[in-house]
Length: 579
Image (cartoon, rainbow, N blue to C red; front, side, top):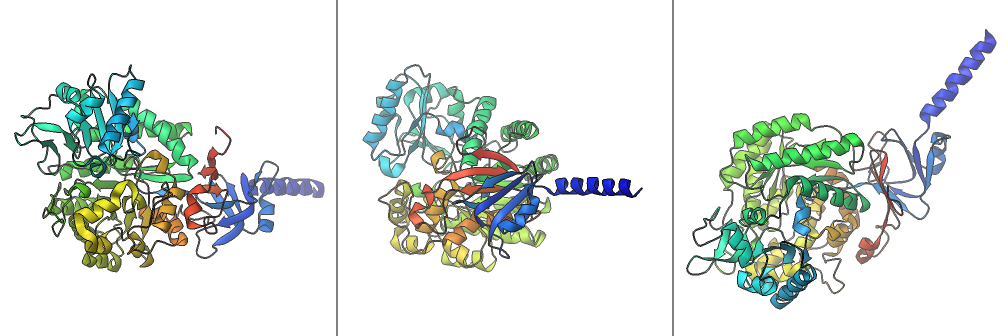
């Protein structure tokens, strides 16, 4: 009996050892954990999709078994996977198709670039593209100008934010755009017209979307699949392991209670297929758009409650609402509490009382809301609504997204109430002449005091997250390290001649910026107990970098490469591999 007992003991001991073994051990380099209790370590062990050890290299050795893959990270830095809380990586691929005008320096450049693209693609039935700005063009683009480049086929070119579009005469003809065509929402969503009321070729804030469908450029299943299969691997390659998709950008997004919901269901079904197949690259939060002031709030909440029950697991989530209440500030359409330099004040696409109604209803339904806040008016209304939502649910984590312009009084309210903020650094620096636009429409004094204040919020302890907002920036700018460099330099990382803007704002520290794309982002998503730092028990969402962002010069951060990305204990990207 003694021999049998000894054999049994040895068997169970070896089984126990095998069960303790990790699937992966990262060791040899530095580990920046983002865990305040243990900021730095030497090794991380992973088993069954979770972190089972963080500490020194010696302490990781007991977790190395016969089947453990030991990953030598000598010279590398291991970090929590990056989290983006504002990137449209589902459906938005269609906006980046065709000719890119981001590098154009004048109207003549734009026309020449479109013409060259059209001549090089004679078999295309239609010409699409993205990237113009009113500042560079010198006003609103016209069909007459675009006809010079494309006279024989329909053409629709989106502006650099993907909010407005430039149509040629053929596209307007096919879509039936005439003097009698109504504006969806005068002053917010409309056709630019001449003195006689005839549309001249620019559709503002999505007015053009039906025309895009009419020229045959939209195919929901095809384009949603293409976008997921293109942008998800790209984001994973950039080190992203979780992201929030704040509204599926499709030509149906204005139809809040109808086709927008259909597109959301289609997208979630496609994502769920990938989750079941084990090919989903990132934890994905998907939101519905509210851009229609007449949206039925009750019906929307019923729909959202349904979707939240269905998608509230570990990788797919529908538990937020997005309000988009304005047009662009740089063309003086977004509502300001004080007039623009021209005397205009802008217009609310969704009035403050409706914003509050939606956000409070969301809080009652257990939903957080993100609100697009590009102006002092929408920022003020957003803060009012968030404070009202907190009366219903004190833990409501509704957030201001962009927070581009805020008065000093509202900056204080953000800080005093620790209202979460998401920012895209390239939206408030000198990228795409944004600095010139800000000074032109609001003047120097207000620009220096109101514009791009997100670093100040981070310094005051406000949960700030960062993101690229693809497709309003090109997908090439999605990389979290690119975004982080923008935050710590206040410059466009893609422009070697860029200067910090606004000079009145002190940049974020690298520690603050890294936290903004890890722990603070996780908190905004109610995932701080599961992701955002490397701690035992959290999901194994990990990125390995070939350089240390805390040691390189601030303007070299975007040059750091991603060696590998892991989500849920599985590699979603390895440098030099197709996996």
